[in-house]
Length: 268
Length: 268
DNA sequence: TTGAATAGTCTTATATATTGGACTACTTTC
DNA sequence: GAAAGTAGTCCAATATATAAGACTATTCAA
Image 1 (cartoon, rainbow over the protein chains, first blue to last red):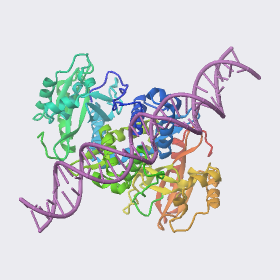
Image 2: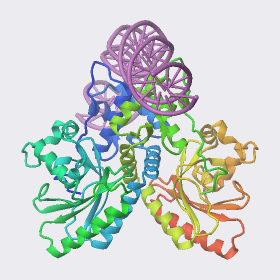
Image 3: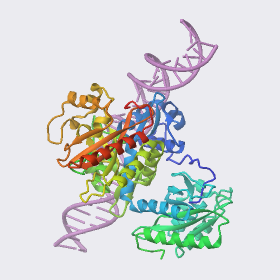
Image 4: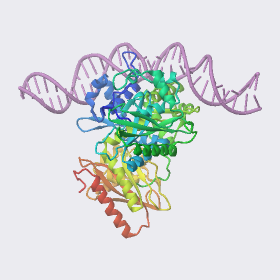
């Protein structure tokens, strides 16, 4: 959905170390996180420095993880990246979450049908994550990398995903880093929460020129059986789209949203 | 490719514990492995018993992992399964390994075009793994779950994936559990290695009635830039397929194999 | 309601994983 | 070929994560 100013996935937060030694599991989480934000393989020898971790620890853990298949180490440069096994686990996730599976297909269909960039988003802590995206057929491609994370207040989807969340919880969810708008202004949490809650009755959300001056975003919720917003589908559009086409896209999106959502229609 | 007698993914091996306490990382690996072989969410309270691990450890680790997003804990039953983040990491793997990405597409295309069940396989230790599969249009569907693991000696793909591997290494790769054929007979490693090496010159591999009496498998290698067999594409077919159609399928498969492989054509 | 079973939390001790750093092996540079 | 740098291995010490188990909370049955 709404697109980031930069495609570079931000470094991503992990729990702070509380002493001179750090848990193996935490090191692994940071390693994964680093690899993803790196966007590709990293040299094994670089990792200790990049992660602020001792050489011995990293060499040990990479050994274990690559032996298991979660990581792969390649070439004489010892390039480290995610391995087959993690891919298979990801596939298991997909099989178990058909909302996501069906959402993906819907995104593809919408993009193909309308020619507009379409995305499937979810929430991870205080950010939305682009889970799947299909660029439209416009000459100027507005693309966001899969996996890129954007603070919830920056996006239309974010408002939908928090539409059922009470103020206090919203406040708890948003990390300090998620409380600044793209233009640098701080987020007024109360006002933001109000915007979110407005969408309890209003399935479509729209933000205009929020992340980029020249784009707008139109989003619809996908709800699970319990009626909670689990994900959103959205279009990323140029701001100057004709009124009529806009209507059409809104209709399509609503239709898609209803087709995928699993009932309990809290958002009508 | 070749299909398993049972769809149930086997428990999968992990490094043995060497004392009264076990490393956190190892517990995590076992947990992941268990979840996958379980085929779906498991109750949190069951996990300590299922993994032979202390309650406190598992509760602790699941907390960390679910907070990170690698696992998700749902409902009042506390059902534990893979989370969004692991899916995103899997997607990163896919982006970095376009052999797999293109192989998937090819499998879909082949299945659609020929109506036969088609699969993409890789190797993980002594087993092959089905990375992607598309069932054919036959009334009797021969399906293998994505992620299911089959000992290399049971499959045509296995022979291709070991075609460049020296006997000693093959012997090291095959775990005890991978050295028994479906009918219970032990694998003659030397003979098996010879079969594998035969495929250095011969791109197509075929096994008839090996896993199931009524099916055969036809496989072709996918090589990386270094000319190593990284994966295979294959058809799973009934044994009684007409000679003529067989020829056609062989041609298709060869063509596909050449289209995807990244050169260094060690296998001609 | 009581009782029993199941699920989850918290604390404390000790077995060991993490760490620093010395050492080796390998590359690159001059 | 020597020197300097880079990559990887190995070992021993101690900070702490794992584990045991007591405890609390919740669910279910009668």
